[in-house]
Image 1 (cartoon, rainbow, N blue to C red):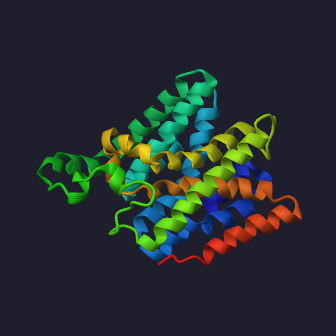
Image 2: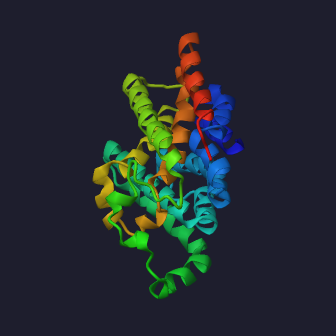
Length: 275
């Protein structure tokens, strides 16, 4: 909650407290804590908002090549949970590519890759033995399956997530991405949106990236992107959606009716099965 508060305080100062509470009660975080008991992934989710804070600050700066805080948190991610760190790598890479296209400059991609390279270098003592032994490890049956059968939409590995959770998480993915797109469309011409506009929009739009790894056509991504299948199931990208929604829901809840609807839906999600 503290890391989310720090992120929201920078990009949306008037709503930092509410954003922190919403992130701590976001559906996938609750599912991970109560239904999956994935302690390492939870630890990455705990400092993920702070990582995004350093990320948007680095990409939004002019002439800055490296952010020490970002590289340290990237290294901590690799040391804590490799599948979650891979998900973070690809989401932030896509975000940097989109930002570079919007700014018509390759610099955002280069500075992000530099940060990742330094972070991986700091964690190399932990990662290198596993990479060196990779050729001696048995390939699981899941690795041999076609990705579109195992990783997208309703098809999630049962040993990682219970089938009863697939449908509400999928619905949350679609509805959340739709809400972010609606918010961005309404605010696309605004010069200032609840704080630092450019950084806020980048942090929020990262929440739409997870849907790219869930639609059926994403099978090509799971098949060909290096090591992506080690992420194991597409819902691992959903913490970014939780962060994006936690930033925009307080902004969109300024009138009483919207507040009742949005917070009511958020609470309703808490009543869905998590185990």
